[in-house]
Length: 360
Image 1 (cartoon, rainbow, N blue to C red):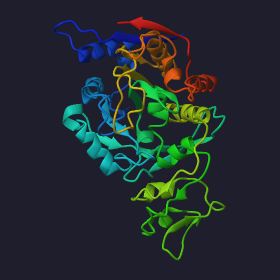
Image 2: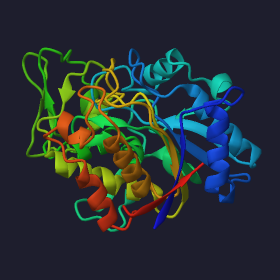
Image 3: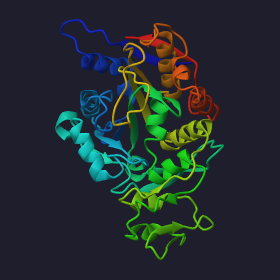
Image 4: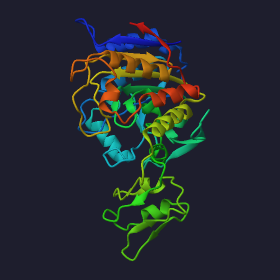
């Protein structure tokens, strides 16, 4: 069984959570990774401004400093979002990261956006063992890295049930077009009220699917459109969005397959902080109160095992809403099946749900 290393959030006087995180990495075998003179992408969610449950930059600095001490070249990274918000392009995303305290000084390493200025700089890579997808559209900078380190805030999610290592990597490393593949089984549509007729979208369409009516508004011919999502990335006015969302189970399985595409053939390691466990994703510009007390910090070479260990620990904890233990994620998001991603990830050989906890 995979080993998942764990330390709780309790700190004696003179010992900080950052010290405990460093010790956790040491005991988990972080130094076994050949970092010397290699680029290490630390995949993190910088948090939508206004959300106060996302991870503080101090955690990232501890990880980056450890990589640097081992001879590596760390950088923090994330890819653009598909939805309307303040992280849908590199400039807004960086400003959001700065607002939340992330910069080269606070984190001890540079910040590089994973998929370019507009979220369209990606690489099509194979999905090993893919059942729903054969290829994935991953941010080019992510694929250029030699090593992938996932640093995630473990929390709930309204579609996937939970957000941990799999979602941080799979959804987080997809370009805007890749995110559309995961989120959507349909094709984009234009909202005329938001369209300014700037025609930038047509410049990014390789299939001639976009035309303009007498009113100057864009129109998408779905008989020509292939659903690549390039037009979404090129629109500065959020006038082009997803047409129809896929089933939650399908979304979760695609996240697992995108994770497999990112990690294939490279060293990888996963850290999850199960604290301020909010019911919704950090992509929201706000956060609800935590659903359970703070749990601790987990680390593992197995992304499936660490996610399952976090789920089990959260579900074993008493709810801060009714005081009862149980399946908190299913209770909060009954339409989401948190098992879907884990079962599928295990089926395609990404990791295993059986694990041994090693307490530090």
